[in-house]
Structure formats: structure tokens, C-alpha cells
Length: 474
Image 1 (tube, helix red, strand yellow):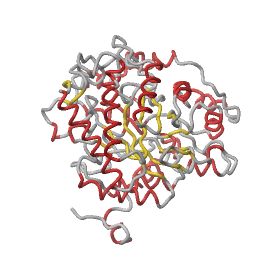
Image 2 (cartoon, helix red, strand yellow):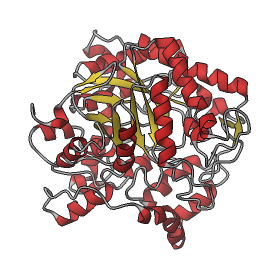
Image 3 (tube, one colour):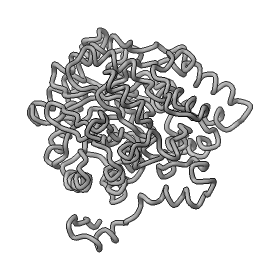
Image 4 (spheres, helix red, strand yellow):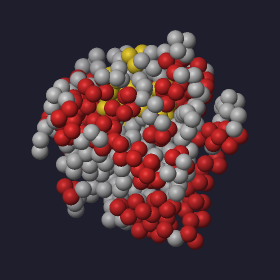
């Protein structure tokens, strides 16, 4: 391990992480409807810290109720949330793991607005309806933009007061920052639209406002879609930002005070390239009904998902952009099973080329997400300077102890992630977990036992077992 680049600490300007594997931003509906946190959230984050990752990047923590993707995700919209996030951070720190909270705002990409937002259009850079689900929105006024900038600054202050280790701005994957950054979405005529400099203004003003609030000695990174692929599904939409434009945005963000950049792709989520992988129509049909009232195109989508004779239409729209991808850079020679080798080659590291180009033009560390689960592949990506570290979501859901497997000398876990995406297709309605039955030897009860494990201990049991971290009663 001493000579393994995966386990070499990663040094940011204001933060040192013990290894090069980060848990990427993924989570489920673990929390209370009003945005307050739960013991299940604590359990969820702790299991990845226990699994050996160097840092956890939380999933989408809204800075305002108006800007959440869906209810039952813990927020950081008020000072009342600080004690909860402090407790989560303390539990993660017990495992020598850093905890980076992802500050977010949905903009128009709001899966389920919740009763507090009933009758309100989502706030965005544009008034154009979102093209895939048909989420309605309205362009933010200058006053609303300034209020939102302050919401991010306030959220950053709360993160520091909670004793957490850093901030990530979710400025990728189609959420509010992307809606400002992207040439495919932002159609404003004021100083926040038009030129790339104007489209980047909102992100840069947020970074500067956070620095003013928390100082220059606290970790701040941002996530960005290296390439938008804004027309990946709806082909008559504009394509969105190019890699060259994203490189320029990253340079400006570094100058404004960012300490790191996290490279992803896409202008909606899920996106055919983020996460790349399977699309199970049976699973999505059972969960997508939750979103039927959220957008004006959701009924159309539901019909495409439900009826088999319509599947070819959806598959054509969803998969066509994958055929344009360049070949993978690494062959994975260590894997002897041809089926698994093909699976890894098709899914690992799809953002590495964008990450490498960004890394050439910035001095801050670059993280890359994209289906990583093979130790030799990660080593080569870091060694060859495609990135400085990787972030992992689905393969860590499948194998929470993946980093321990790497430390034990394994190139792959015994039961690798199959990239079926059943975890994410379940998440709007069901508990997040691995739903690939083959990984549990087709034992449904065993699979459910693992999925439900995050709910234990409950609040009451935790309160009885430990007085170290008191649990508030509601």
C-alpha cells in the first residue's frame, strides 16, 4: 500500500484526503419530509466511511426548499440543520474519512417539488420547459439570483460551523449551475446569459461569495459536466457546452478561489452517459409513476417505459449518443473473463478524456467520476495524469468495502457491479441499494436484507446504545 498510488494521500490547498478514492454524490430518500435529517442518513454515510474511502461527497444538499430535487433529502437551508450535519460528520470522522457536503439547487430539474412548492414553477436561468421530463420553470430575476447566491454562502457557513471538511458546488449534470453555464439551456439576454463569460458569472459569483463567508482556508471544489451532450436524448435541442468551454470555466473558477474540480458529463440526470449502463424497463415502470405529476412529458415517458412495442423508440433516443463515444484508453488486461472485461471496457472511465484535458489547464486537483471499480485501471488513470483521484457511486453501492478489496491486493471485488442501474431506477420510490438479484445468488430475501440494512440501527436503538451522540426527539 505504501507504494500504491491509490493509497497515496491527495493534497488539496486546504484539505488532505488519505487515499484517491472518493464516494461520489449519491443518496436516497432517507430523511424527513421537511428537510431535517434522520438516523438512516447517518447510517448510510457511515457504511461508506467504514468501507475505506478517503472522502465522502454527499448527494445534493439543497440550500433552499425551493431548490430541492425531491422531498426526504436532508437540506442545509437553515441554521437548525447544523447540529444534524455535525453529527453525521462526527460519525464519518470516526473512520478517518473526510466529509464534503455538496451544496445544490435543482433549478428546473426538480423531480418532485413537494407540497411546499405546489403551484410554484421551479427557478432557473430560463423559462423554457425542461426537454426530457417536461419540468416547468421560470427565469430567475436579478433579485432572485442574488438571493440564491446568498443561500449558497449561508450554506457554506453552516458547513464550516458543523465541523465538516469541505464544500462541493453541484455545477454539473443539469442542475441550476448547469442551467446557467450551458449554451444549450441558458437563453438569457442580461449579464447572466449570452457569452461564456456571462453564463459563468453565476457560478463565479457564488464561489466568491462563499470565499467571503468562510475565508480562503476552507476546502471548496465544484462539479462540472466536461461536455454537456445536451441533445443526447432530445436530438433537436442545442448541444450545449464543449470541452473547450468547460476548460475555460474551470480556469475562471480556479482564479475565483476553487480548490478542486470534479468532472462528470451531461445536462440532465440520469443521462445516457451519466451513469452509462443498463435501463431496465420493468424497474423504471414501477418507480417512474411517482413523477407523473411533475412534468408535462412524464406521461409520454411512462408509456414509452411501460409498453414493450414502444421500447425501440426509447432505446433509439437513449442509446444513440453512446455510439459516438471514443474507444476506451485502457484495456484492462488483468481481467481474464472476457465478459467482465467487455463490461468494464464499456463502462469505466467515460469522463477520463475530458478530465485529462481539464487537468492540463488547471493547477488544482482533478477528480473524475465514471463507473470505476478496477484497481489497475484507477492506478493507470492517476499515474498517466488523466486525473488525481476518482469518485465512485454505483460500484460502491454494490461493494461498500471496495477500497479494502484494493488494499488486500484484489483488482476487482468478488462480485463486481454489473452497471445495471437498477439502484438508480429505484431511487425515486424505493430505498436506494443494489437490486441486481444475480449478485445475491438469486436470493431475493438476502438482497432485501442488504437493501434494508441502512435503516438499522433506528433512532431509538442508537439512542439506547450510545450517549456519545444524542439523538433529538421530534
